[in-house]
Image 1 (spheres, rainbow, N blue to C red):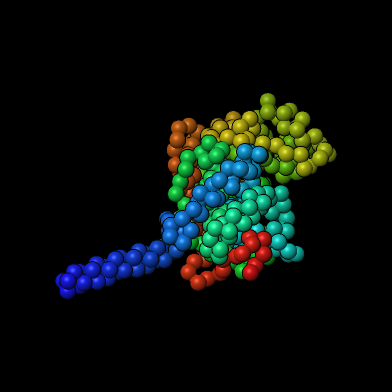
Image 2: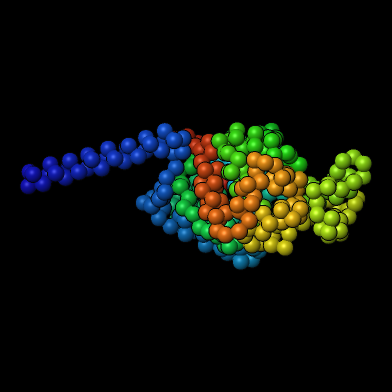
Length: 326
């Protein structure tokens, strides 16, 4: 009996040391999230989020792109802390760069169900990270494992969203903004590849169609045979809020046609099209044009992005409602 007691105590001590070492290792790498974070505190967390996203997707498949963009815009401002979800005057949600964001209702719906099942346990930041993954999978992408354990931020300011990547930026400008978040050139091309689903407003690229160089000429990088189609969708002096598929002909399918379109001069945004001609980004565009490599790399890049400046441990809070601080 005595030997059994000491063996048990010894095994428990070894287990504790291993778990502590794992936690320290994660923190050294600046992440602080891990797989299965809610396995004991809220075992159904991921399935609840998944079923919620599925229900909304069944009603409107285009919501998947909205959720993916929402996660991106959250992580690129104050880190992945759900600060983009907060309502109120002067919050991130009100910033001009966040105009047209959608998918808030999906996160709110999931949060309501999770609060009923596991009150005060699952963060809005984790809900958004999981929902982004599920949105990609429902759109035809490959599933990846999402580390969880993020906590929600207590600050949300519109001014912080001024440095989000813009639709007319050069590769150099985009690389600078991604590098500032610890993301490299491959991450840039991979994550922008999320434009394989979703749409954009005409106002973000109309200058490319009619007056790109200030002399009334279109952007020469646009395929001449594609130009009439774009002009018909976005007439000069027309409604700038008309929507156009970012991946022309495949806006609801997570696939590699986005990269093939770039090669053909059929990129919609200037910031997208330049990826196919710059020496530092072109090899990745070409690499992703066929096969499954893009799906695999996208999952890796999303995990990397979803760990930007995360709040863990005792930092931040677990919001009761995603749209308001506690």
